[in-house]
Amino acid sequence: MLKASKKSASESVEVEGCPIHLRRTTSQLVRAAEVRATGSPPNWSAIWRKSPASPRGSPRAAARVRAPCSRGRDDVIIRSVAANASKRLLWAVEILGVAPDDRILEVGCGHGVAVSLVCERLDGGRLTAVDRSPRMIEMAKRRNRNHAAKARFVAASLAQADLGDEIYDKVFAIHVAALHTPGAALDIVRQRLAPGGRLYLFSQAPSWKAPEQAEAFGAQLSGVLEGAGFRTDERLVKGLGSGFAAAVVAQ
Ligand SMILES: C[S@@+](CC[C@H](N)C(=O)[O-])C[C@H]1O[C@@H](n2cnc3c(N)ncnc32)[C@H](O)[C@@H]1O
Image (cartoon, rainbow, N blue to C red; front, side):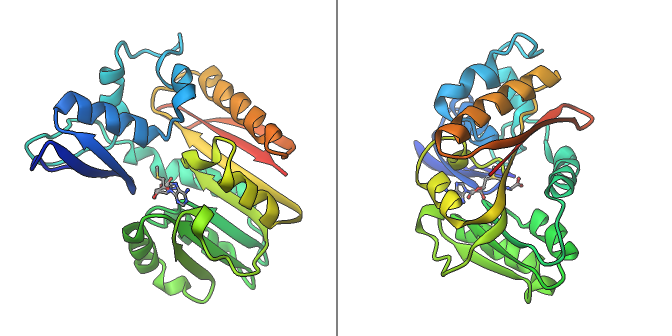
């Protein structure tokens, strides 16, 4: 969900829980929303925007399809990607292959939809959901009040999160750019994985209309993970109706 209001030259919006600071023109708003909605790290823009197989001409045109919709005078008339969300999340949770007693960490849980899907499969296991947005954590908590015994919510960036002495069999993230580049977030994941534990990273950009685009993203991500001390187990690409999603599984 993208929310925007035109009150001043400097405005804040959220795209699916990602706070964005942006300037006030509509085209700037569209560009900022595009970058945050896709979670694209800066040096990966070639994959997101300029893939030869992309049917979209300009970044702005692509943004109209990529980002969720907004309200207000500066409305960004954007086709919602929400229609695909459940398919993507279902696929992600299927790939996770949740065992009843798994100890799981989700980084960037957003509204907590994947938390629900995971908790439905846990019996004796537990899930910790971290999101740097307190608002997202509140929404995720509310959505998962029936799973309170299995799920713990932490409102902090992964680098700041108090995870106690928890370790995890599975760590996953869907569209969380902090795990797409070397740094504190990947270091923490590596330290918190139990022996034999795995990291699962998922992404889908609406511009990925050919499997090669998702595969290229997966290959780059795999390279980043290997550089951060992980070993890639699997790279997956999935057609989800309107486009392709990528997953990288590493340990
Ligand atoms: C694009 S949203 C995706 C939300 C959800 N995973 C989904 O696919 O619907 C990214 C989420 O990750 C959170 N996030 C981004 N970087 C983070 C970090 N370093 N630590 C914790 N949460 C983070 C944002 O607040 C946001 O809720």
